[in-house]
Image (cartoon, rainbow, N blue to C red):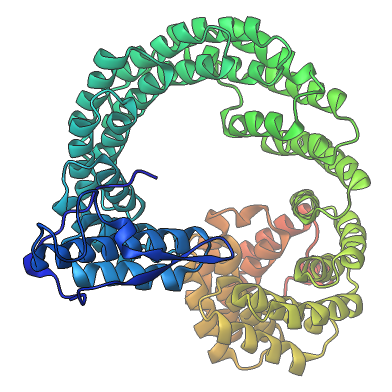
Length: 600
């Protein structure tokens, strides 16, 4: 503790001591002793009589009392009696309101108690009263820094630099607060002052590097890091920092040069190979890029997560100069070889195969992943997507059944199971699965609409028209613009010849939402046919044929039916014959052709 001499101002004294003998109690470490105030008087001063006046004696006693209160406050703080310490320092200030030492001690007391808001004014007061005391200024500046008052803190550290010109710490603190307050150029000047006064050191260059990065001056940031590397030639972290600065500054050649030194320095760190590969890619040195990549993927010590993160961006880059198919799939195989029991290696291979349209191979990789770890739902979802794409409904029904056992609270397995069973003409199974999906789709309105749509299809297959219509209506309540539901619902109504006006309205809306869809156009044409609006039906059926429906047996048969109703018998028979060639038309098609007449 640096004790500061007291400065007494008799005109401001509030405490009046009676002249004469006085006894004070000085606290100790568990005991107390009686101290005569006269013991605290400066040598040569007496309580009364002699050459000194009565006024001088009282002032001497007051000085002694103040010093005693101060000492007692300090000792109380050291002993943890913060209440007594506060009281004693306040006693000093009541007697001497301009006592800088008491303000300083109160500031320390409150700061140590965590009451920094009340400590700051005390520290500021001490500094104002004695601006030449470095301890006061330092405490005040530190508290301003802790409360993010960087502008004020910088001003305080400016004063501290003047008081301690031979100590580097205030210069660093000044530079830091200037930096935090946005005065970056002034901060750089402060670091330059440190260097000129105390010499170069790594921390100084690192701080200047951070400021230059903050300013976007990467070339100057690199210069500072070069100095750090020079001072720390065996520390790999600074080489890595320097290489990244060069990368960010679009200087891949320099980055690669630094990284090669780093690889020699850190030969036991295989993870650096991936970073080196990235640098060679930016340098367009694809030969070394591929070499470093392959080296990295062969290393079991490099985490699979790092490799996966390295590979993922290539999914959309297959076939480019730096990510040829052969190279990417070679890395995938190296990944599987290095991590054969990790499901992520097989799943990632599946992702690349999927994006390369090699769906059967992708499915096999996904199934390998699931054999190792069946709890990754996204992999199951990819398998569902492949089976849907390949129309492998048997496989889809089987895989969704397995997934439903593992994820009983996920709606997707039940939804796709329902779809697969509808395609397999197992509507009862479909209804069971879709009913399981319904309560789990409450928070997902689009999915809930789709579940009701499939239920409508399943109930239609069961000839349960009431539940079928109700399901379609519920689907449309959620998504009234679902073109597929509008189309299917309209078509089934047309087959039953029920509510045809409603069917026509829905079919027209479906075509507005999805123009040029041959299936939707065929539906609208057939609804119009059932309404007896044959010219309109012919127009829409010809649209459907022009948009791809000419390859559909059903649509060609419909066209023949419409032509027959319009009295164009020869053309109708031609359309029916084409439908027969395509296969898959109605059971009465042969009778239509042979008897040249229309049958339902």
